[in-house]
Length: 211
Length: 370
Image (cartoon, rainbow over all chains, first blue to last red; front, top):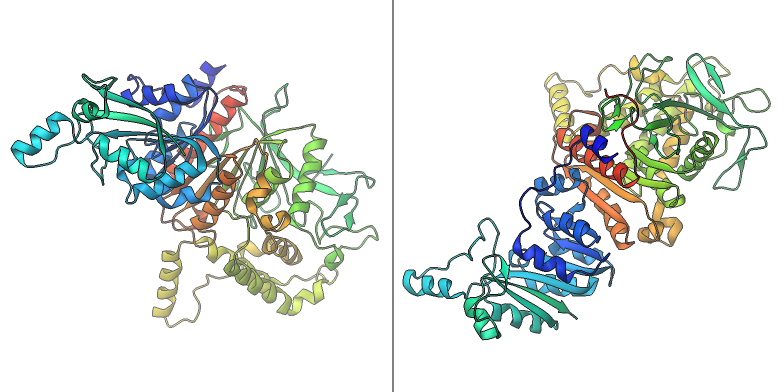
């Protein structure tokens, strides 16, 4: 049946392996959860969550072209600016609100994070770590900030270290339930047993937060 | 079932009354409609297309009365986003319309045309009448209710009134509440009709005349609102350069035969009165609570008749109600009427929405390929 459907209007499944932080995020999302992916981009995480976690996943995406592509692929996506749009959701509307590499693109990430904590029982955030030792070395030697590896194309209005984000979460009144340091797009980073070490050695990190 | 002059209609028994929102009832009810494609054995592939103010039931075939071609050929037909090879498409002339469904031009029980004796109707009444038709066609659940503008209002009303009987709902360039500037435009149309001496206090049919001039103005008001602002401005500038006062093209011919003046009065008043939230204590979200319907909401950037803001209001309410909703704003210069024209991004997004809903409904390709 599905094969016949595919003949009419093919819906391409992504061929490439899931992005590292997406895999980690998917493990943090409950089976069948109602999830909102803020800044869902091409919808790769939405598809993964629907496939792997049978989540009722919907997304918000600012970029018109990306949002259209998501809807054309059959994903529930609203083209909107989350900075203002999250306020439209009632409290507790979602089990999980996700920012995968997207929170750093907002003008006022603290306010957005607070809204997310209002509308979701838990919030998952993946960030790039600008305090990785290579970035520090780059800054020390070249005197310029560098992008986290594999981060090309992701808008960063804010560059954070893992410590910076932990401080932001605390200032927003959120509790860090879990933090997964990552390097080379895989969970775990060498020597990342403490926040101090993760801040040196993790390229990115995924945080699970609750209010 | 009757088919007079190529217009198919279903005349309900006079015992099957249509109960109106204002407490009155219409009987007997006649619904004129067209169908395309065939109903599958599970009866799960029915699509209801709700037509707009200038539309009729001939969504995918020429109107045998006016000779006008199908009004939505890019969207409904074999191999189109609403593929008549897969879906059983139903499109009915709205209650109060002038293409065979009970309206002011229909004959009342005393053998005379209803005229202004037809009770006031609301969009909820139009949808209830469609529901009677759908039931008569032995369809319990619509796979999809879809419409643009006024048609979108009907689709929304369907999703709100019959949440368990609409699997998916597509609302295009529409609103959950008629805006003041739309009311103003329609009001001018209504006043023009009523100021036409040939309107004869609504009794023009008995006198064998039609309020052509008033009807033309009414149609023009609706027609201009469908155009992009840039075209309206260009038409005006052109007329001004010729030292003319108006840019309206010759309003004599075409459209007016399609608009029955009294029908315009009834239907436009129903549209202007539409305010879905009003029935739910002023909260639009409450109109969609506990809805399992998947919603696709589409808007066009240059639409000033039902601007994207109106669509966003719908989507916010849907999201606040916890409904599954997608929203796409199409960037186009074609204004409100973009839904009728060539808009590849719109068609791609609509196709994706419909296909994924069909997959979720377990619908496969029916019949042959186009």
